[in-house]
Image 1 (cartoon, rainbow, N blue to C red):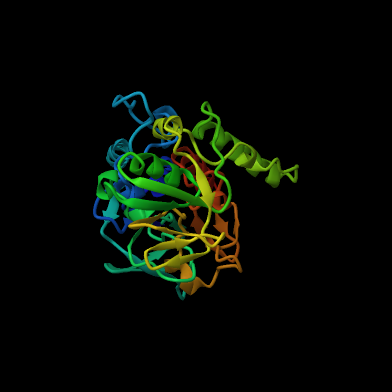
Image 2: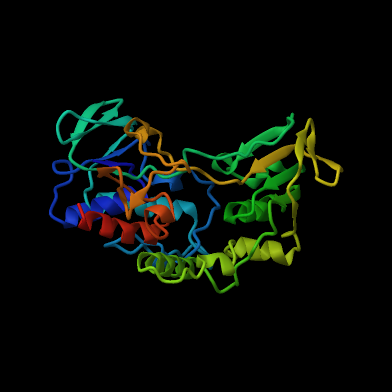
Length: 343
């Protein structure tokens, strides 16, 4: 049983099929969404991938070239690719099926409880990602204006002539800032100064660095620190254009929320109509709570992709702790290959 029909679930399905298992008979992919595309189908339309198509593909079939412009592919191109991918390999994704929990059965099976009945599985692969669990940090005080998270952002035109505070120091914050600053008065707040990657470094290099770091840890070699020495933010075209407009300036995060804005740490206050929280996501692991596997950090300890305390459970697509860059398109494919090899 594979729980989740996004990029990680589809990559796992590809390797299960290639190993000789029959979709719909030997393995099933369940997905809560009504349409294909995983989290990409829920992202804002102008979001860009961080790599060109040849470095943003799942195993077996390259993503068709992006011909829309000179930039990296938009989210809709990825959705089209994932839609055709599951059809191409006849992966038999069961849609609009929500998994409530996974429990241990009386025999050697795990029981997957869904809103469409229970399933018995010898092995369960959890690939539910993070998009359904947006994270907003807690600040003292309250704000009377509009607040939304990256997960709910759709278009810059929703903020014309507003005063907008964008919180967060990652790629989503930079891309949203680049768009919203064209139509609104924007402020960017980060916990530490944002770090921009060199213009010629994109997702290809990031994946290779993450892979080398993972291998170094496996063999007890010196940890070179991953991509932290390079930066965090990929300079896609819109972010470079924002740099040219001189809007990529961030100030230290604020101390508290106030009725119509925020109070900064120096005691001054600023008024805003909207706060956009670009503060990341947490792994969607609620369906695994009954198994009692989480460690003190809230994550499930794993050996590779296998849960240490439940050998019948594998996790993929949540971040480097379940495989190097496994939350990326290319990384999900390589992690899925290793996962299926040990089933």
